[in-house]
Length: 118
Image 1 (cartoon, rainbow, N blue to C red):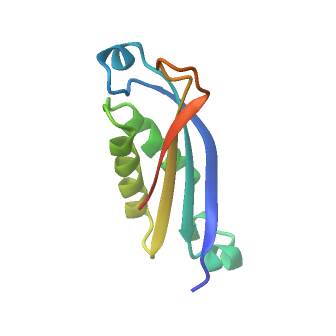
Image 2 (cartoon, rainbow, N blue to C red):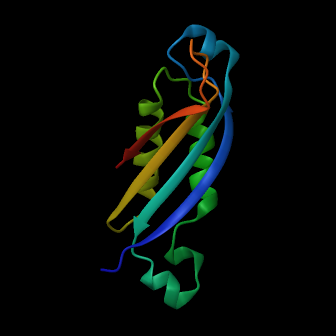
Image 3 (cartoon, one colour):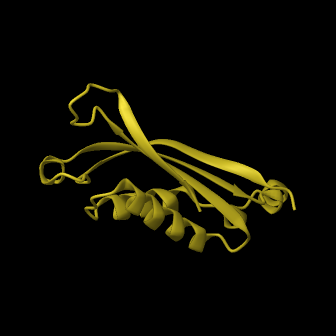
């Protein structure tokens, strides 16, 4: 089987995630990148959306799951990844990275992220 990769990068969604209550109350924008390894041979031959992954479905999953407040980004990654895997009938792997930019920490930093492969 030929595995190819679909990438959706820079999904920006305002959400209320964070370990500290203040983070969850204030909320912030999170950036999500998703990479799906799957067989794209059929879509390459047919030119039909039904033979590949509909990006809009992935974006809707991200919006729905980001709307559920969580303390840990690991939890959000797992929920998103598991739902995306259910969309794909064939064998696949899903890598998700959720970044929190300018987190409220005692040392200034640009961002940190959690990345999971499911």
